[in-house]
Length: 249
Image (cartoon, rainbow, N blue to C red; front, side, top):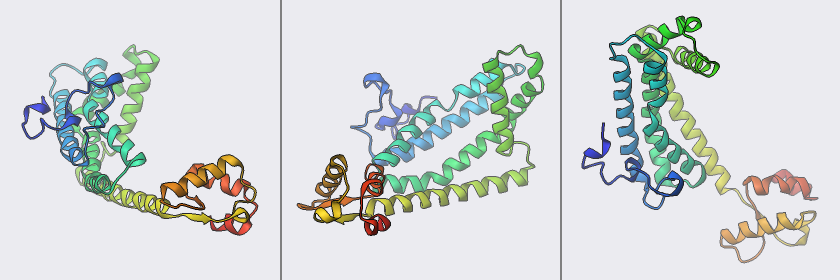
């Protein structure tokens, strides 16, 4: 399936081949609006890959089932890797909106992956024969781990239970995303302004330099700032002699 064959997706750098050094994503061309269509296209491709595994007429084998399952979703995985790295390290309101919008669809997709009856039937058959397949330790571990992932994700549930489980997981994904964004907002907005030597007492030079830079980053011409960044919030209570300020931070 060539996702770039669709003209609406051809301008999406997330769906192009990445030709930057070391195979890195083209960060200079990626925009927040690229992620939702790219993720949806990659989920569609992943479903087609699963259907192809299940539709095989050959008996299940490690290569045509386990290895094939392990190889699929590569496109989705690489797009998610870029997305979650950006939302964790260089997020924006636009990226956070996409994160909220896609939390439930992505959760629903992964429920569908591990409840895919045709694929699980083949994985389950291999698991039942695992002792006689002549697998090496790495192959056996992959088979056992994959089978456990399917079972824990509801592959053996009755249809009604699968639907309910998927619904719960979607809601949990939405709530987890909202909670994480709320925590991030609180962390980003907190700042403790230090003014004068009395507020800085006990802080070594590296902590003072970091706090001064934090103040400069926030447009302050004077003073030092302690934020909830780990490089600031950990050294400050460790070295500061000001118990009142430590308690506040």
